[in-house]
Amino acid sequence: MKTMLAKVPWLEIALVATSISLTLQLFPAVGTALLDLVDIRNWSRTTWFVVNVGFVAVLLAVRFTPTVRVIGWYERVADAFRWRNRLSWQERAAFKAKLEERQLARELAAARKHQ
Image (cartoon, rainbow, N blue to C red; front, side, top):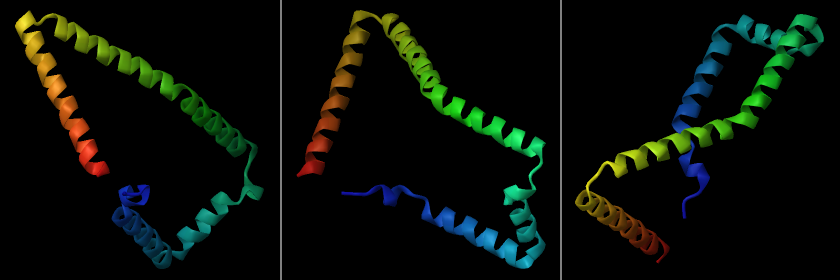
């Protein structure tokens, strides 16, 4: 059984980490500037305001993204049914047979995987 770790793009993560480390070694002033940016003791009120607005925007996005996805899903399903309703009864029967074949193939693949 595969774990979620197998799906992580380790090569890309290593490449990014290596690039960042090389940049910080070649340009030490960049590392110092980044530390100064992260040091919250030196932040102005404007910076705090922008960070808080960004944080609220992220929270709102997390809250409403599933709703937007569901709305998009409903539109795709409605389009699929509109397309299907334009078919003749023979085409509908062939379409249904294809769907049943796909479902059987999925079930067989799942059964083989669990053996």
